[in-house]
Length: 179
Image 1 (cartoon, rainbow, N blue to C red):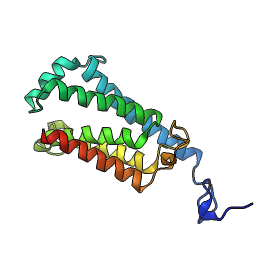
Image 2: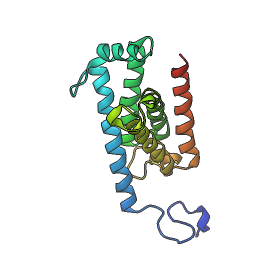
Image 3: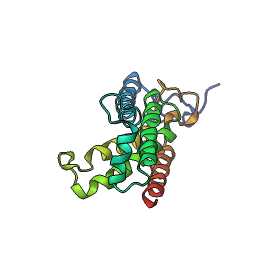
């Protein structure tokens, strides 16, 4: 029995070609691994002092000087969101939630960098803005077939999953900024 084109999960309805290609699977995998593992490493620097990072106590002091009180709590929260969100993006597991965690931390980083302008050279917000945009894009496009989310409906992504990542991340950031 042949399904109508709009019900086929493995084809693009207007063209009848496969909706996914090896190129798109490998491309989103490369993006997930790069963004996810770099961010996970950044979180591990904050939490554990690995990769030349300061560790939780020193990061907590830095957070306190930025107005996040208690500093150690907020440093632990940020590091945990970076580590777990980054790993989730890298392996494609619970991708919309992982992206939301990343977006929330990056919005807070943008709030810190905004007074310094756009460019990272002066402490601006370009780096967290790009990471947040990549996380939302990964959630919207979906982690693809080469992910642990493959059995779940969100592996294909949608406007809804991208909006969830942006909205939940924004809400989380607003709560932290309001504290």
